[in-house]
Image 1: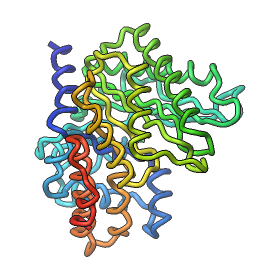
Image 2: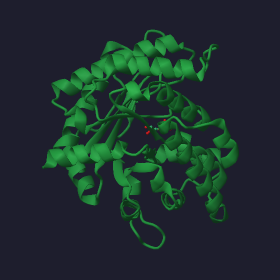
Image 3: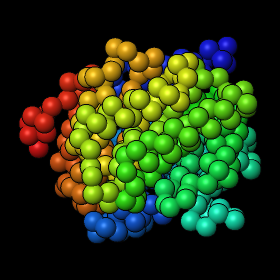
Length: 342
Ligand code: 13P
């Protein structure tokens, strides 16, 4: 029964051309993004921002699930309605980030290991009682010179698999996020090689830890050249490399794939997801969806700037990006959508 519930949730998260909206920035990350656009870094401002997002009219047409942060899952709208209730009333599935961040890895200068396994079983029980039906854990892999190292890839993959097993035990769908960062001047070929290695290692560990693949969502990076790489491949080349890499490393039983945006512009993230679906959708064993934070939120954040009078325009921008990504899932996104929505 619990197992069936897990599968139903995973299926619903990936259904109907919708995707996930990641709004699980830690307080530190959220404050950094607020600072850049001149918003006060307070609990009250973070709460108002999240209320602006969650009360966007029509959000559930495009968004199947939202990923919350520990602070956010405990917050309410100013009329007192808990955020989790607002989300569930809209027909959206509430989820929660459960890792406690990527920390410097001992013996591996420049590399990170994600922490949060201690006490995780109890925290998952608490979040489940609060209404969460899925969880997220992000591992961070950096490409520089000889990194990532074997030690870093294996430790992160092991942690992801132990987290995923604990989630499934608690009846929560694990969103497994091994992110190979875009920072650096590496080529697309190097990103391909690292992403393939990371994904194969992650799935080995998921198998060893007895994780049910039908009851999980993979949240990978797209295969991209580093931001500072002089050669930036076309949208179609990125789509081809990403799908080829996933076919080499992700078992067909996985319920769905929902990409992170990783610092790509909203338009590029939509265009690349669209190209993958246009070119490959009918031939893939899994759906290709989105689980974007910045590529959905950024324009809305820049418009909102903490001002009540900007809420409606910010919500319009958020809804627009969500719609573009739903269209990209269908392979129907066009540049004209951007002009019409601007
Ligand atoms: P971005 O889409 O901004 O990369 O965020 C996704 C996410 O959940 C990061 O953990």
